[in-house]
Image (tube, rainbow, N blue to C red):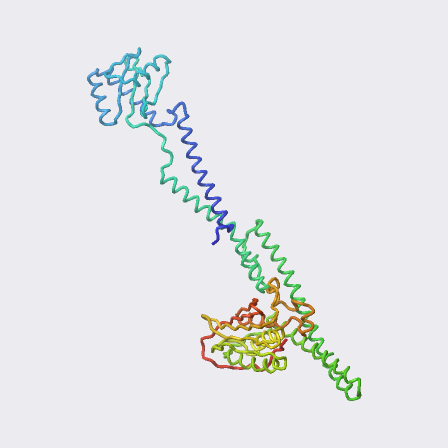
Length: 466
């Protein structure tokens, strides 16, 4: 998965935002702690315990005397780690020794008449308050805690678990937001590959947000495009079928005209016959292309020896190429077995080789090679012609596309041969591509190999060739 993907952007943005919020909350709590002028509010139950502690110590001193109080102080220091000092109402120490922090607290309580006071010195908290004993005497109780009361906030493990939980929530949220985009991408790819029935709405379920609206708009667009393409194909097929009848009648009329025409009229009739044959060939190609694009053609489960089929095609092609001072030469011919229709494959490969014959330079040879690579048969056809501009390589397999208008017309091509080859190869689960090489064009066809025994069968009908 690429780091520039929308999913990762959303996931990391949400996660970092959540982690920043956790850190900011911890920082705010710490700042509130160090800036609070009355930490007694922070201590809660601990403050109540200190109040009870103070009253208990004063009760011991007032009721049982200084010796009992000293034992109480020693026991508190040993068990709780706290130092206790007691002052009378005038701030005079009743215990020895007296720490400076304790005296400061006692003086502050005496001078300001505050009930509770505290100072922090050297990381320790000194806490005090005035206490009235059961006898009515007023004492000032002061204690110094051995361990300082510091703000700890969330422990490191708690912070880590909080950030991890935020990451899980961010992941689920990012997945929820981007899953429609992934589904839409998958449907768009399927639609671009020719599946005009691909729709995204069934995959979105009950979503009704903006992404679901985008998916429904795409489905509406796909329906319109599919309707237009189907209408175009149907129109093309209907026209092609309708042209067959007048062409047949024209052929009959030509034969009748030849019987009653002599001299100069023969040349005109020959010209009419040649143009009629061209139109008839074009109609045949249109019908073949329409059948391939509409899915009417089905690939039979025939086992084909591709090298034998290629030998037959090359023999026929050489018969046409030699009068033009050209040649089709085999560089390598590896045994290959594929499943499909021998006539469909013959039509597609013939169109590629005849296209190469048409454009290769006079006195050169078309180089054909058949090899295997992993689970594919690789067929390459290279000519020594002018090639194709790089910007137009991706368009040469489109119907009626012409690289050069004048050149195509002079060569007799109408831009259907490579289109038929492209549809035929894809119908067999293969791929075809074109690239320029030094002094020519290289067409590469890849077809999936079959591991079954070779049982070569031939279909009865032969496809038209461009």
